[in-house]
Each structure stands twice: as structure tokens, then as C-alpha cells.
Image (cartoon, rainbow, N blue to C red; front, side, top):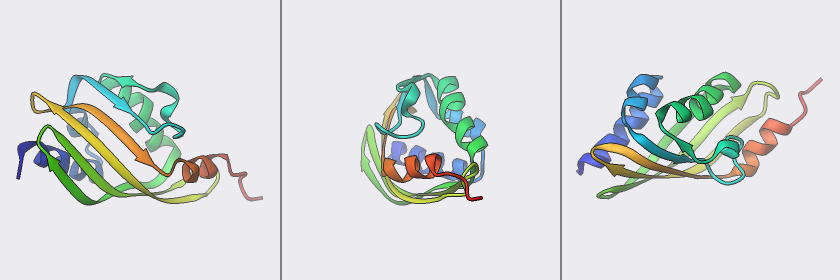
Length: 136
């Protein structure tokens, strides 16, 4: 098992336990992070640097979703590039709408850190959850 694959696995383990400082520590100081086109948090793409990712993605997810998770099902070790398949689940607080969407994440590593991230997911599910009118 490659060291970058282990880093990717540790990223999801830390996310699962809510250890955001550990996750941020895995990022290269010049990380470039892209949410999927049309995704609810793609409005600030690309996020450059760990602080931008923390404020623009992770803090917003934490504030706006209940039970949000990224559950992995497969890791593909490509050396400097690691591809991860899985599912997002969670409930958007403002509307009560649930999502259960596939994702593919592509990580590129440099110097033992995440240098680039690209998300692919069912953006329509997220847009529908966010823009659904709250039930009366």
C-alpha cells in the first residue's frame, strides 16, 4: 500500500471523527481545492490554501448540515494520484432535505501532502436539498 493511499485513508478517518485540525494538517500550504461544478460550495472555486478550504467548505458544511458524512467504498492507488469512491449522506438543516449521493474524489499529493483535490458528485441532489422550501 502506497504512502499517499494511507494519507487519503487517514483523511477520511479524521473526517469521520471530526478531527478537522488533522485534516487541515494533511493539506499542502498551497493546496488547490475544487468542488464539483454546480455544487453548492463551488461558488468560491478554486479554494487555495488550507484556510480557504476550512472556511469555504468545511465550516459551511458543519454549519448547514446535520449528520453529514463521506463514506468511502473504494480507493484506487495511482501513486501521486489517489481516487476515492463513496457516498455523501446528510440532512440540510434549513429544509430538512436528505441527500444520499455518490462521489468520486481525486487527490494529487506533493511532498506528502494533499496538493490538489477535485470533487465529482450528484450536484442536483444537493441543489434540490438546499433550495427546497421548508415544509410548513
